[in-house]
Image 1 (cartoon, rainbow, N blue to C red):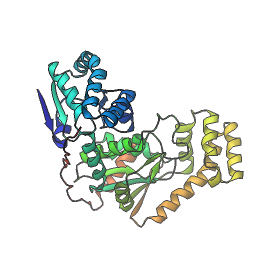
Image 2: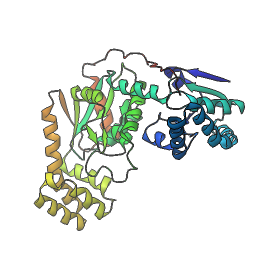
Image 3: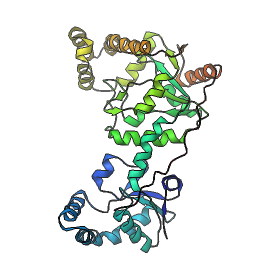
Image 4: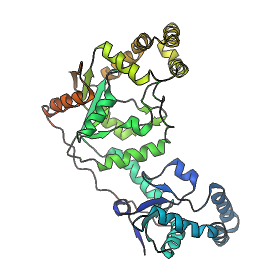
Length: 358
């Protein structure tokens, strides 16, 4: 059995999610949670596209079946192994021939198949609208080394709504941010991941977001979301310098000297030549607290400048000696004592369906 659903119903439907576009299309961006299940390789897709342009639709369809036909038995076996309940959701770029072909094959193999009207293009259009949906936001601020990320995780463990942009971006936001992280996603995939999370939040409850610049490594925070963040009140963690250095040594001390030196070189122009050389010498001597103390002169200045740029309420919260879990409890107690800001309900999950056209 095969059925075609609009986006909201498709995302809510049961079944493993298969993306039948080519590997390169999938790598550029995909629906979070989807599994790459390509009908064509990148080279085969190029061949079919060239055939379509030069010889027309019928010739391209014939070539497509010649290339994909020998794979059909494998498609059925692979889909069965992925779909424990026998249900499959799948899509291509526009909900056209590729998804129809794979749906037919898997349906013949006894699987229950659901396709997406309008394909990934419909999802992508929706994903670009979602960051404009309003949500009440608390910005978790604090200078470098105050342990903001760990506190954000503690808030999530307490059932709070948390948008961890650095985790999605695979980058911790500073020149040291890529250390120990997997490769960053494409900006398109970064936006897709944010959209799914943002749409899933309860609009009557606040979302906690760590203070970030517009760029996290190579990823750009969607402008409508960043504007909301820029207007939100800041709850700012305040720790003594000694504790901040201890946290930085704990977080980054396990990386090689070469990695730490390379990260320091990336901010040479802003840190200054003399300070950079001093910091590098301390890193090479593995005098990490002293090196990080020197680097904080740059990061503290940058953080202070960003705060003064924003005319929003700012609430410094002393957390000296507190664990991440204790910081989370203190933040929640403080936030609950403040007037709540509740946004308007967002528009319903729009279908934005396009006419399937291949």
